[in-house]
Image 1: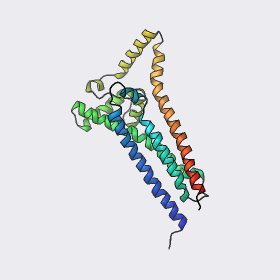
Image 2 (image 1 turned 120 degrees about the vertical axis):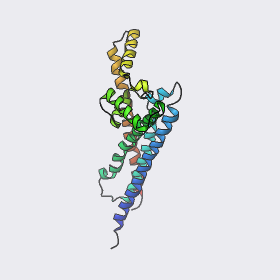
Image 3 (image 1 turned 135 degrees about the vertical axis):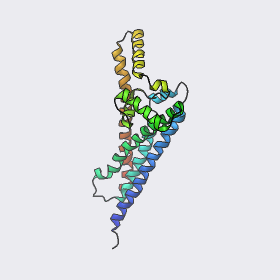
Image 4 (image 1 turned 90 degrees about the horizontal axis):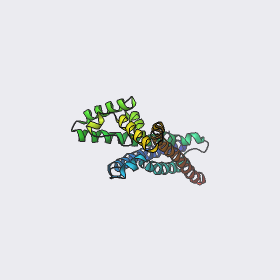
Length: 226
C-alpha cells in the first residue's frame, strides 16, 4: 500500500528536524571545547570570560538558528496540528544543547586534572567526584553545574583538589569585609547569587530568541503554498 503523502511529509519533518537538533548539539560541544581551550585560557581576561559564561553566547546563536529552521520545517506538518506539537522538538532540544556544554566542560576538567596529576582518566574522575562531593554534597554532571555557578573555573592542581576551596572563599570574603566595612554575609550572598543570575539571564534570552525565530520560520512556512 502506498504511503499517504501527509504521512510522508511528517516523517520528512522528523528526519530533518532530528538531524538538525543533533547537529546543533554537536556544534555546541565543539564551541564549548574551543572556548574552554582557547578563550578561557587567556591570561588576565580568561577568568572574567569564564565568570560571564561567554560560551553561552554560542547557545543563543545556535538556538536561534535551530528555532528558525524548525519553524520553517513546519511546512511539512499538517495545518491542523496544534502549536504545542510543532514546538515540541525545539522545547526538548534546548535543554540538551545547554547540558551538552556543561558535560563537555566537566569532561575537559577531568582530562586536565588527569594531565596535571599524572594519573589515569579513571583516577582523575574519582578525584573530581570526591572534590564535588566535599564541595556541594554530590558528584556527577549536576554537581558540576551547581559548583561552577559560584566557581566558574574549578581547580585542576592536586593540592587544590584536596583542600577546601570554601575556606579560601570565606577568607576572601572576610578580607573584602575588612576593607569595605560591609558585612561578609553580603559578599557571601553576592558570590553565591551572581553566577545563578547570569545563567538565568542566558536561559531567558535563549528562550525568547528561540520563540521569536521559531515564529519567524513558521511565518515563512505558513505563507508557502500547501
